[in-house]
Image (tube, rainbow, N blue to C red):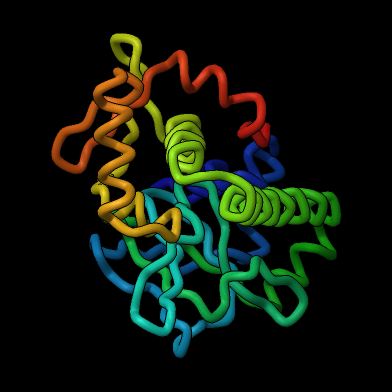
Length: 233
């Protein structure tokens, strides 16, 4: 395994030169490269582990449970994303469930290493703040959708967001590279599966989406209408 290559794939390090990457590697700030199998709970609200975790490969889902045990998905993490908690820095991922959606590779940074990195590479602090800002913007966007819009518009907005992040364009549709059942879409929206199924059936009849087992495609024309308000780039 080429550790420098993996480090370069972490979003906060991606614009650094090879020489800078070697210096960071020599600081021994990031370690414990671990593969975690699909459908593994990395964290529960009772087992929050201190440290910053970097997703090198794979996808993870952040979610909460309400009093009746209903899931609400807070976000999907993929290659280059960061989650975790330190005394001096938080990504707001404590007290949530984090589960792998597919086999995933994580590496870790703890408080002493984080402080050493900030001292040696203070310019990285801005990148950590940018990553945190992006996460907060996603949460704010979720809350706005919940508060202001009906289910049909929320479904289209969600599918547009997922298509932008995980979509592969083919034949006029964006195939979302995630296992997406109607129940999972409902979990992401805090809605019932029955209500989501009704909306998805309407959208399929209109040609807005194509669905098959655990697979959703969104018409590129709809995606293009929604990209400006979704994009965080």
